[in-house]
Image (cartoon, rainbow, N blue to C red; front, top):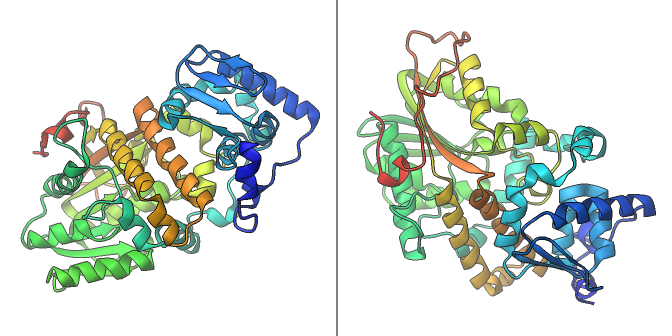
Length: 443
């Protein structure tokens, strides 16, 4: 009854694939049920069904309220169906993050090897409209970041920073969020040696905090965004800070940027680019950076084997949260920059645990302010969707499936022709999980 009640309240015009349970053949549903029961039975979960069936080795609780719909959705569209089943109320978990963390930690094992090898036959493919072309990128960015500045302000801190913070120590608290976001930004600025007179290009403005802090150091900043909503608020913040003479915020694709800069900075923007356009993104960074310049980037990453397995698959996150997005691996980033640019990887610091805490604090604040989200016109399905998105992301970092890196690249003045060169070795790139928290900067 619970799942039916939730589905009946779903706006079918806005959420058609949540409101309706898909048709599926009896054979396909039976195979899905068998595969799932085998997989769930080996996990440290407790999965309960209405008929009294219990699966799992014990652990976080998952209640399946509507097994028929649950199996049909997953059999029809895999993890997209799993997420849609949650939005429809067909399953739930008292500790959603804990349950999703178990699943994320075993992601490579959930689908049997024979089905993994046939992934191209059953997994949904990326829609052509979501490709990261200049027009597609504008549509993709607008779909998420132009939702409402007021929405993001409800769960972000006063800096309006929508990327991982770097805390001085863990666990974190809400009171430490804004200082941790400023610490993250200052660390990137230090890596790029941004100071008085530095010419800075920022790819991905957000709501302007990095540009503000760079300009406060005396830098001259050109910041690029594809979000009209973000640009409007960023310009207001720049004007209020009295820094309009040092900061320009342009509605501009990274491929359309011009000029030469001493430093290029970009925070969690590459995830929106798409694998097809990663070379173009790094070539743009390279082209805009002066010889001897420094690029400081922050990027979410996944293991390379999981990237290879899933890069062509259309996911729940791409369908409902970040159209066109794809998280790279460190290997992919290092391979592209080594083969297509004159950028030299100098340093890499990872701090996934900090992102898990950042997401926890956002999720708790979003949940606490659910009524305010509703007052902005976002319905119950949207609120359930965003709760799932934030929990799903947090679980990725808590399980180690996801990480986040701060990269420092320097432009090799002796190699500015874009000719291939050898990939940086592990001795060239520092890969640590503690340096970011300790506030170290690059030499």
